[in-house]
Length: 313
Image: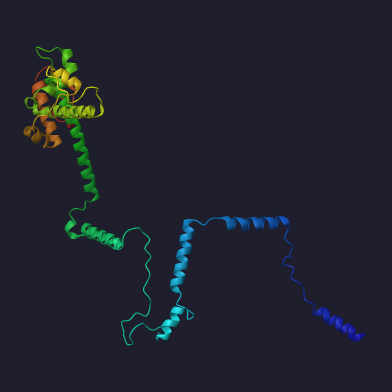
């Protein structure tokens, strides 16, 4: 009885205590099984995107390129029969310059032709050398030079706009009703009258306005003749028609005058210089100040601050 008690006490002392922190395994319920199967089905039905396919293909390619030829391969066995040993080079023995590693594979991803990428890089490099070279140091402008250039261009555009305004003012003064023309006819037919007059007889200061109007009118008539379908045959020629009938039917041929060298020389001037000449002409002949926007009764032009725009504030 004493030995039996000792065995029981020994068994009691050697008994392993179970880990209470580990959760007991429970059987999967029907709800959990249904959710798991649904997740697995969605994973199988999901289509791989192009980006994922490209990454998978790239990973497989890199893995294959980084893996040496296995000895079980037929190609390796054929080279081994010809004397190839792992780590040595192919070809004649003793060749120090022989390659011991295969050629690196460069995957071409673009659609350009072979060598196009290198040509593009070469052009970019040449362009960078041209821009950053010492011979082009003068061409690179600083921030202050850029602001000055932008300000100068802005002033030129404004002066050009003021030139057109001055030309319209000159036209209004120099095309006033004459002895044989009423004011109503002048207001309604001024553009056509100046268009029919020889442009070289018009003052060169506002001759460009008339020439521009003639060119636009000619372009408008050309578009009209091109898109407007007339019932009348364009090749029909009636000797009894006068110029007004020809103009109505669109059969009149109008040509601009030949090149005007005087006008070209005037247009070649800077916008500020052209504007200055027109302002002086308006003041001297018509006693009109372009900046005050009024015509003075006498040549003294009492009340006008001065010739320039800055003097008018």
